[in-house]
Length: 116
Image (tube, rainbow, N blue to C red):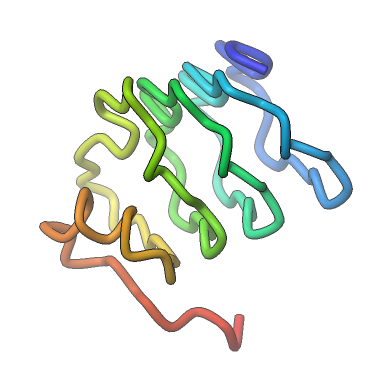
Protein backbone atom coordinates (compact mmCIF):
# COMPACT_ATOMS: atom_id res chain seq x y z
CA UNK A 1 0.00 0.00 0.00
CA UNK A 2 3.04 2.21 0.19
CA UNK A 3 2.92 5.33 -2.02
CA UNK A 4 -0.69 4.61 -3.11
CA UNK A 5 -1.81 8.25 -2.93
CA UNK A 6 1.68 9.78 -2.94
CA UNK A 7 1.83 13.11 -4.80
CA UNK A 8 -1.90 13.25 -5.51
CA UNK A 9 -1.76 17.02 -5.24
CA UNK A 10 -5.31 17.74 -6.39
CA UNK A 11 -7.20 15.32 -4.12
CA UNK A 12 -9.17 17.17 -1.42
CA UNK A 13 -11.10 14.21 0.00
CA UNK A 14 -10.53 10.45 0.14
CA UNK A 15 -13.12 7.99 1.41
CA UNK A 16 -11.88 4.50 2.31
CA UNK A 17 -14.57 2.96 4.55
CA UNK A 18 -14.34 -0.65 3.33
CA UNK A 19 -10.65 -0.98 2.56
CA UNK A 20 -9.22 -4.07 4.27
CA UNK A 21 -5.79 -3.14 5.59
CA UNK A 22 -5.43 -6.00 8.06
CA UNK A 23 -2.56 -7.66 6.14
CA UNK A 24 -0.77 -4.49 5.08
CA UNK A 25 2.76 -4.15 6.43
CA UNK A 26 3.97 -1.06 4.55
CA UNK A 27 2.12 2.26 4.74
CA UNK A 28 5.18 4.35 3.82
CA UNK A 29 4.31 7.66 2.12
CA UNK A 30 0.70 6.51 1.71
CA UNK A 31 -0.74 10.03 1.63
CA UNK A 32 2.46 12.06 1.34
CA UNK A 33 2.22 15.33 -0.54
CA UNK A 34 -1.54 15.22 -0.94
CA UNK A 35 -1.21 18.94 -0.47
CA UNK A 36 -4.91 19.80 -0.92
CA UNK A 37 -6.28 17.00 1.26
CA UNK A 38 -8.33 18.63 4.01
CA UNK A 39 -9.92 15.82 6.02
CA UNK A 40 -9.08 12.15 6.40
CA UNK A 41 -10.96 9.53 8.39
CA UNK A 42 -8.83 6.41 8.85
CA UNK A 43 -10.71 5.22 11.92
CA UNK A 44 -11.45 1.89 10.22
CA UNK A 45 -7.83 1.24 9.18
CA UNK A 46 -6.39 -1.92 10.76
CA UNK A 47 -2.68 -1.20 11.20
CA UNK A 48 -1.93 -4.08 13.55
CA UNK A 49 0.52 -5.66 11.06
CA UNK A 50 2.17 -2.40 10.02
CA UNK A 51 5.96 -2.50 9.97
CA UNK A 52 6.66 0.67 7.99
CA UNK A 53 4.78 3.95 8.27
CA UNK A 54 7.48 6.49 7.45
CA UNK A 55 6.32 9.89 6.18
CA UNK A 56 2.73 8.70 5.90
CA UNK A 57 1.26 12.23 5.97
CA UNK A 58 4.32 14.26 4.90
CA UNK A 59 3.44 17.36 2.92
CA UNK A 60 -0.29 17.23 3.70
CA UNK A 61 -0.20 20.94 4.45
CA UNK A 62 -3.95 21.54 4.07
CA UNK A 63 -4.98 18.68 6.37
CA UNK A 64 -7.02 20.02 9.29
CA UNK A 65 -8.71 16.83 10.52
CA UNK A 66 -7.21 13.36 10.88
CA UNK A 67 -9.09 10.53 12.59
CA UNK A 68 -6.79 7.64 13.50
CA UNK A 69 -8.79 6.27 16.42
CA UNK A 70 -7.93 2.64 15.69
CA UNK A 71 -4.29 3.08 14.65
CA UNK A 72 -1.87 0.62 16.21
CA UNK A 73 1.82 1.27 15.66
CA UNK A 74 3.23 -1.03 18.32
CA UNK A 75 4.86 -3.27 15.69
CA UNK A 76 6.20 -0.43 13.59
CA UNK A 77 9.95 -0.56 13.14
CA UNK A 78 10.11 2.29 10.67
CA UNK A 79 7.97 5.14 11.91
CA UNK A 80 9.97 8.23 10.97
CA UNK A 81 7.83 11.36 10.84
CA UNK A 82 4.49 9.60 10.61
CA UNK A 83 2.98 12.78 12.00
CA UNK A 84 5.22 15.68 11.00
CA UNK A 85 4.79 18.99 12.77
CA UNK A 86 1.98 21.11 11.39
CA UNK A 87 1.40 24.81 11.78
CA UNK A 88 -2.14 24.95 10.35
CA UNK A 89 -4.13 23.70 13.36
CA UNK A 90 -4.41 20.04 12.41
CA UNK A 91 -6.74 18.19 14.77
CA UNK A 92 -5.64 14.59 15.33
CA UNK A 93 -8.21 12.21 16.82
CA UNK A 94 -6.66 9.22 18.49
CA UNK A 95 -7.52 6.71 21.21
CA UNK A 96 -4.50 4.43 20.89
CA UNK A 97 -1.78 4.81 23.52
CA UNK A 98 0.99 3.66 21.15
CA UNK A 99 0.22 6.59 18.88
CA UNK A 100 -0.33 9.06 21.71
CA UNK A 101 3.19 8.55 23.00
CA UNK A 102 4.63 9.52 19.61
CA UNK A 103 2.50 12.61 19.14
CA UNK A 104 2.07 13.76 22.72
CA UNK A 105 3.73 17.08 21.95
CA UNK A 106 0.81 18.12 19.75
CA UNK A 107 -1.41 20.74 21.33
CA UNK A 108 -4.13 19.65 18.92
CA UNK A 109 -4.15 15.96 19.92
CA UNK A 110 -7.68 15.04 20.90
CA UNK A 111 -8.23 11.70 22.61
CA UNK A 112 -12.00 11.98 22.52
CA UNK A 113 -13.30 12.34 18.98
CA UNK A 114 -15.95 9.66 19.25
CA UNK A 115 -18.70 12.23 18.87
CA UNK A 116 -17.46 13.46 15.50
